[in-house]
Amino acid sequence: MKSEITIKKIQDLLIKGCPTIYVDDDASRRMWWASLEVIQKDFLSQNYKNGGIWVASPLPAFNDKKFLNQLYGWLWSPEGFPYFQNVNAGFLPFNNSDKIKKDFDLVSSYKVLSLSQEDGYAPFLMIITPNFQCILSIVGEKDKKILLMKCDEESLKLSIELMHSKLNQENYEEGVKFRNAINNLGKLNINNQFEKLFWPILSAKLANIELNHNIQNSVKNDEKNVQITEAKLLRAISHEVRTPLATIRTLISSTLKKYKMDDSMKNRLIQIDNECNEQIDRFGLIFNAAELVSNEVPSLNNLAKINLAEIFKKLSPLWNKQLNRRGISLKIDIPKQLPQILSDSEKLELMLSGLID
Image (cartoon, rainbow, N blue to C red; front, side):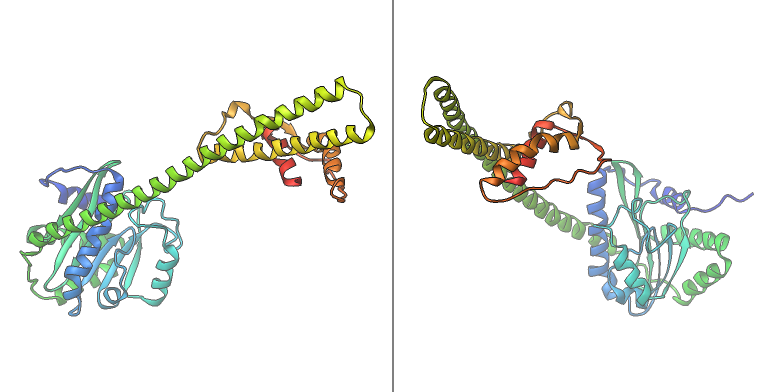
């Protein structure tokens, strides 16, 4: 029995004898995007007007409709195209299924076929025009990828025959269309200069991408460092302000206990004590926010199940007193079946009091 042709088998045959220069997944994605841009901008743009064909998986590799309109294609794509979430189609800059859907509505010059698990999800593209031909793919294991580019006559003939066989086994009518489309192109003019030009242009493109990538990372790191520095400054200010406020509260408490005074003076000291306490809570919120910016988040061990109803009942007298001084009344309606939450009770109470404030 004849074994089935899959895209992965085609890739495995093409990779034989190729230099094995491995890169990680992120680098391979950058190489794939850069290669597509180089092929379309520097080569295909000068060779598409006389027609041709393309075969791709798992997504259309072109980003310019003029190529889709002029060239006929076959696309092996996961179920649900063009709406699927491209979890397995990672060789795109972002999830652009909406854009693909828009292009698919406008252009009907390619046939969508079902991609099987045996085909794999590694990106694959074959372009055949009378004067320009190439095969592009990413193959390999996770973080051990190889950029494959073939344009020699032997590889092209092998890929065309295998693609024809694959179409025949899955959709005979499309296999006939594929063979007719190839025959209609006539004798192919193999461009032996393409490979010599492709790699230097791609290298220059990747160098610019890497430079921009490093600059962007540097800017992001600088911004992050500024944020962390500001956060540390806020934490320091918060600490320096809370310490004397706490000292004032201690002195007021001691004064109220040791000395006799009239009600007017006593009430004034209590009022000062309340204001100090509120300011300490406010700066406590600033301190906690600074911790989050600095990524100095407390351990999950500090989290516990908390009954929100109990928290509201505990804090409502303090909130009422706080709001009454400003002429505001507060009514809290607590549902009977309020669920428990996982939180840091001390920080939660501080946050809720900050919201009331």
